[in-house]
Every structure is written in structure tokens, then in C-alpha cells.
Amino acid sequence: RSEQWCNTTYRTRNKADTLPASPISRGAGGVGDNMLRSNTKLLHLPFRRFWSNATGNSRRQHRLAHNQHQHPSSLTHNRCMSTKNHEIIQMLPPRFLRQSSTQNYDQSTHQRLDVHFDINNGKPPSQPIEKTNTHNNDYYSIRHCMFDDAENKWIVTWNDDEISTFSNDWINEQIQKWTGRQPQNNESYDAGVVKRVHWANLTETHVRASNSPLSLSFSDVVSGSGEQQAAALRILYRYGILLVTNTPTDDGGEGVAALAASVSGGSNKKDCVDTSLLGWYQQQQKQGGKEQTEGRPVTVLRDGTDGPLRTMFGNVWSTHSSDMAAGASIADSAYGNGALPLHTDMTYFRDPPGLQIFTMVSPAAEGGKSIFADGFAAAERLRIADPTSFNVLCTTVRRYRSIDDATGWHLEARGPVISAVNRKNKEHLWGPVTAIRHNDLDRLPDLPPPPSCGTFDTTWKKEQEEFYEKLQIAHSKWDEILGSDEFRLVMDLQPGDTVLVANQRCLHGRTSFSTFEGSRRAVMGCYVSQDELDSRFRRAGFQLH
Image 1: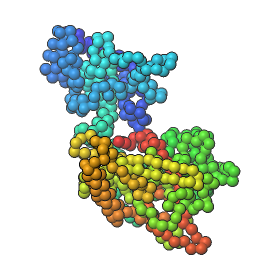
Image 2: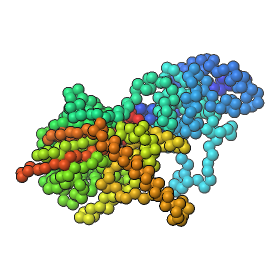
Image 3: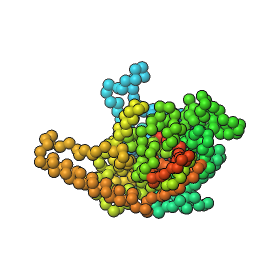
Image 4: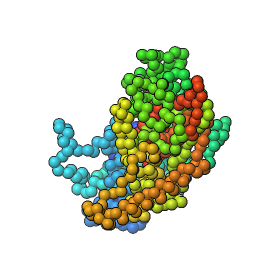
């Protein structure tokens, strides 16, 4: 009976050879980012090693199972027989693993194939469809699994004889995203992971140093090789800020838009001159000419797939109102000459932009220095110094608004100052910080939660007093950190200096400034959506929570 089971297992392994090859590779996006394809190498796996790694109890259980006409899974559910610690893969639910298998995805679109609906009208089934195999066993039960050391992957056989393969790195990545913890001491996996760097005590001298990891030239990023664009994305992912020098300031914003295109849209831009703004810009530079449209440079292609995010300020904006396109909003304190406290932009958007690009066109005669801060570093400092205040800023939803009567805009959104991975525990132990939303100038007055009992009695009055007291303490602690010189990077930007800022991570502001007759302070810039920035991060293989 044991020999019979072994032969069945061997035939099951052969079945894997007929599975479609998966083009999914690391950084390709989708559920199976790091999933390895099933292929003929499975035939050469050492079958004896697989069987010999099973414990004596496991063998006896399999024999007992066949004596009782049962599948081994009924006694060894989720048992992974390998020298590898099988508890690692067992941390993930079998249902999740089965649904993540490449067999359940269209290999060209990466969309699911296991969704049931009427092929004529698209309606869902009238009754839930429970997927079972011919033996009427649980579709999501694992019969056995093993680890292939040579390929660094897990091979899972299900009760219906289907086989799924998962790279060990993909398993580790899913566990870390889900739980926030590294499941094992995996040096090879850990060494290959690009990690965020929280920064403080950073100075302009450090940023501009010849060996600085935070500075690149415009020509390298826009006209250079793909490696330079990859370097820009890596810096933005790690630090949330990048200085780009020698950006053109006399082209009406084409260079700024090209910078946005270099870190937005799809990552494959070859032969995409008609749809890629970056490709179009590179071609124009090679030809030594500039295409003009209605007297203004082309900053966004009509059918483009990359480039600046359109907002009420236009595609490419300027802080000097005379440079703005007709109909673009200028209802913002940025168009004055006063100081601006540290903030993130577009807090009144449901999903604020992921990247803001500033290019200094004309510095102020006096003052007007730019200030930047790492919001993630500030949030971590608050978490350590005052966990209660950190929790308050993670759980309190605050409201933000922007109104421009001249151009007819009214935008409102809400969200916490600090967004972090919710670990769903009573102690409010939050995971990594994922976003910052902070702008006191656009913030509406705070409202406490409505009374739980439905009546505005003395109990509710006490609750609202406690709400405001805790929020005030938390806000003051947050302001104290943002006001510390330790977290404030002050830069005196010169013409052609461009700073790319991860808007949902880093905050920015400025000092007040003065201008004399014939002078002005003008900054040109644009935005990139968070979704597009995240897409480029994923394609580069960077982890996102």
C-alpha cells in the first residue's frame, strides 16, 4: 500500500509538467510576484529524499490512512516533509496559497480564472459553488509539500492532485506583509530586500556632497540609461527625497514633466514615443528641437501614459501667478510670501499625490529657504516617546478642505495624520507607518465621535472633553517633533535645483521671503499619483505594506 501511494505521488509529480509556464517574475506585479513557474525540472527532484525526510510516524500514518481508504491529508494535514522548517509555509492559510497558485491566473493579464459567473450575462452563481475534487475532499487541503533546496522553492500537492510551486522568498514576503514579522532568519532573502531609511540630522551639505546617495543630475535621470532611472526610484523608495541638479527652467515645464514621466506610468517605455512623455522628450532632445502647441510647450501628451498628475493647479504649475495657465487655481498660501509650516500637499484629496516635484526657477532676494522633513522618522520618534499620542494620531480621523471660488473647486477628504499597518490587537500595537497626511492650514475643526448612546447627556460631554484633551496632547507632541531642528532639512535651492518629495511620507515648508523691484521667487512643479509611484516601486521589486 505504501508503494502504491508512492507511485501515485510520482504520477502526480509528472502531472506538473503539463501546467502552463508562468511568465510572472519578481517585481511583475499581482498576487504571484515572486512565484516560480512549474516546469520540467520537477521530474528531477530526488523522490527518495522526499520520502526519507518523512518521520516514522508520518509513514505509519500514511499506511494507516490507506488501510482505512483515506487520503493521507486526513491525518497529516499541512505536513511539509522536508529538511526545511515546514512551519514557515504553514503560517499562511491553505486557502490563500491555493488561490495564489499560478494555475488560477491568466498568464497574460494576471487576472483570476477561478471566479464563477454566468458567461452570458456576467451574473454571479445563484448558489455558492464549493470546489471539490473527485474524491470529495476539501479543495483547500494540502496532501503534502516539500522544499527544493536547489531551486529555493516549495512544492505543494493538493488533495485533488494539483501541484503548486512557490518561491521561498515569495512565502517570506507574504508572511512579512501579513504579520509584520520576518518568519525566519533568511539571510539571502533579507540581503536582497531594499529597506526604507528613516533620516534625521540631514544637512544641505550632506545632500550636495559628491558622494551623496540623495543627488543625481537631470541628464542622468531623464536622458540616461534605465539604470539611472532605477537609481532615482531606489533613492525615492529608501529616503523619500531626491535632489536633481541642472534641470531646465526656460522650457515652460517640459523638463519638469519629463522628470515626472521618468518615475510614473509603466516601467517599459521603449518604442513608446507616441504614448510616453519621457520617450517623446528624449526624442525631441536628440533632434535638438522643441515641438510647440498653441504657443506653449508640450508638457502632457494627449494620449500619454505617463507624466504629471492633473490637479486644479494644472499639469505643471508655478508659484508665480503670471506663469500659470488660464483657469488654473491659485487659491493657496503658496502664492504668498509668508512662511509655510511643514505639511504634505493635497490632504483634501481622498488619495493625495505620491510625489511632488519642485524646481527652483528664481530664488528670492532674501529668505525663502525650503524645508523638508521625514514624516516616517518623525512618526517613529513619536511612537517611542509617546505611544498613546501615536495611537491617537493613527485612530483620529481629521478633515481637510480646499475651496476656490474663482475656478469653482470644492475638495474635501478625511484621514488620520499617521497611517500605519493595523495589527488588530487590544494593545494598539501598530505596524510600519505607511503614510502621513498633515496640513494644519487646510484642516477643518475636529469633531469627536457622536454619542454612543444616542443622547447628548453629561456622559457624552465628558467623552468629548477627553477626546479634545487627548488630541491636543498628541498634536502638541507631533508639533514638537516637527519643530525640532533635528528633523528639519533646510536647503537654499538655486536655479535648476529640483527636489522630488514622496508626498505621503516627507513634509515640506519654507521660510518667509522678500523680493525687490525686478525680482521674484518662482518655483515650478507638478505631481505624480501615489498609485503610479507604487507601481514603479513594485516593478523594481521593492516591498510595500
